[in-house]
Image 1 (cartoon, rainbow, N blue to C red):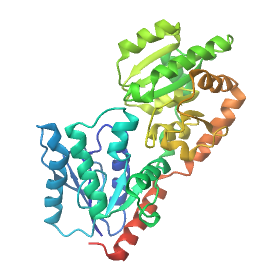
Image 2 (tube, rainbow, N blue to C red):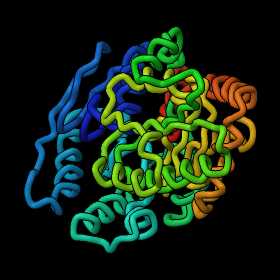
Image 3 (tube, rainbow, N blue to C red):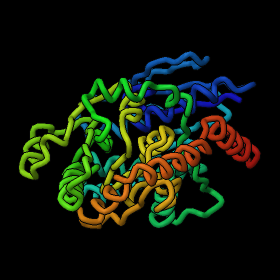
Image 4 (tube, helix red, strand yellow):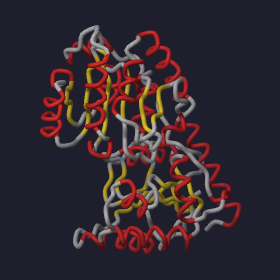
Length: 370
């Protein structure tokens, strides 16, 4: 089977990019699978993948989505592919893994912004690709699926939720005590990990307010917030000072070895305003951490609130999240939930994801693929 995989950046920084890389590398190792990646830039892995560079239009920005879509269509048309699987909005594809929600919804509801020329271009390509090409849609969560059905009125038989996978071996056999000592954490510190490349969307301010509230209500508890990722650290350090928790918040910056962060922590907290899935949630669970997330996070699909962690309404106050933090101060409760989280994450292996994607390929080709 000759398959074209389309993604702007392959194997580079980013949650969706990492998901595409892990999936495609494994697809390329399947018997009778010939994988061709079309991208602007890439980091090649070890699998037998053929790369095709899509020229990048740097300016004006509003033309980039249109240029990427139309250049990709022209390049893929030059070869005879059995199937085109896109992870980006383009105009001609057979399978579309939707890592986001409809762009207009994202701009208006998640970001609270008005549509720019760039946003209008993205929306135009998305609408044309979904309504005219009529690809088989693979939303990464039920949250994304529901938005797709609401905006585009897609039939159920054109949709299949396939969550990202996880490699649990990545999180085992790490020296937890040494890693915590490297951070300067004590045995009594209950380390709550926050991860995000956009502190505003992930709501680090709310996470810090919840930590401050938890510390006020449980004076004997020693929760500590470990923040990994990218954002205006100076601003959030000042906010921690205002809340009186500056000594209980550590900023790690962008961390390459996230497994070490998970191994150093006792729980995971991400009160995101919106997240189509949140691979870091699944990774934290695989590392045995109970999680606190919102009901606008796609990874809620894999969490039973009160069992592997807590799923809280997105509009809840800091005191509600603080109560969850307080419950996780109990070591026995924390370890019980963490064990259940690890078990739940184990059901989401990459092998299972590959199997489900290949099944979709066969279904599409059986109906009359290219």
